[in-house]
Image (cartoon, rainbow over all chains, first blue to last red; front, side, top):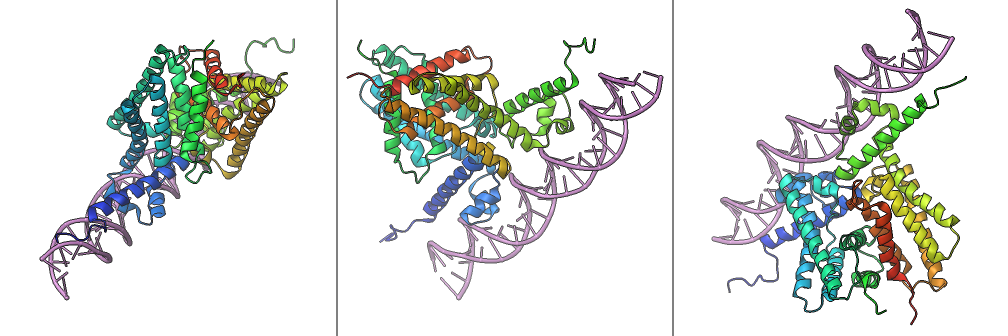
Length: 204
Length: 204
DNA sequence: CACAAAGCTTACGCGCAAGTAAAATTGAGT
DNA sequence: ACTCAATTTTACTTGCGCGTAAGCTTTGTG
């Protein structure tokens, strides 16, 4: 038998798990205290290693932040993929986009995508993240426009409407904790109910 | 004549104007780069003085942040006062509360009330601000409850509904700039339209 | 004009936290 | 049990930025 060791994690796998764990801890503390107010010593302490150990997994502090933010953007990007493969009206796709987005955010719990955080990164990574942000925003607006065109949504200002809901969604991480009484799916359902009722076109 | 100098600002007045100007500059940079990433030298440079001049107006960096955040909280507190003196249903008061809140925020342009910012302050000021935050939130929820009781709003989860809109509102400062094509009153009207349509009770 | 108070500057001390070098430890495969 | 790479540590350098001390400049007032 080449390897009856299937159940036990390999070195590579352990390394990856430790990386993920470190990212989760880092993201939590960054969100609580802010990137610049958080020292690597603090993050390392919480994990149970010394600061220098982190440098074995991440190039530097910026890299750590970058990957934390990437988690958050991936939530949006994955939500978009789900929405695109969803067969249905623009109205339904819009709903799917935001439902997935919200639930991903609450599951993954990455770093806030604040201006302060993004601007703490090197120019190149800033560009990349801003680009991804714009992409999600454009997709969201496009769906709203299509939904208006198909008559399922009232004639609204698309920019305002998109910002309205994106704001509410991004804010979720501020008040919804990991051990919240409310499950991610409950929160997303409530939010969608509020949003969709706000924009839906009703028969005269 | 005791003083034919009425048109010219007195020393006290000039001092106060400079303080205000400094606060506005500080809040803008804090919002762009984050509190800890912003040096006093930077703020002073932008104003056109040296760092030490700021110490003539503010006790220290924390004090500067504290007052920037206070601007934002005052927007909420003043909105509440306006709403309370407004004669009408809970539904109308709710609308008034948020309309004023949004417009004040866009006019005053204080500092974001993020966890990171608040936790950068001394314990005592943290307490005070958290208290004020809770007060506004409680008032918002109370109005929603009353509006449900009076039958003008659907039976919704009050906590979720309040967080939903507070999130959208707080996010405004992220995308609405001072020279935005859209006036504060236009933005607030749009937002209220979206929110109120989302929660209103409709005849069967 | 004198002179005090207000307003601001230059020069510096000091602590904290990012990042590095090199040594110590662990543990998987032989 | 031995080896060597993977992992983590201890000990250190460095720079940035807050805050202070001491002095210079401006301005209103008698």
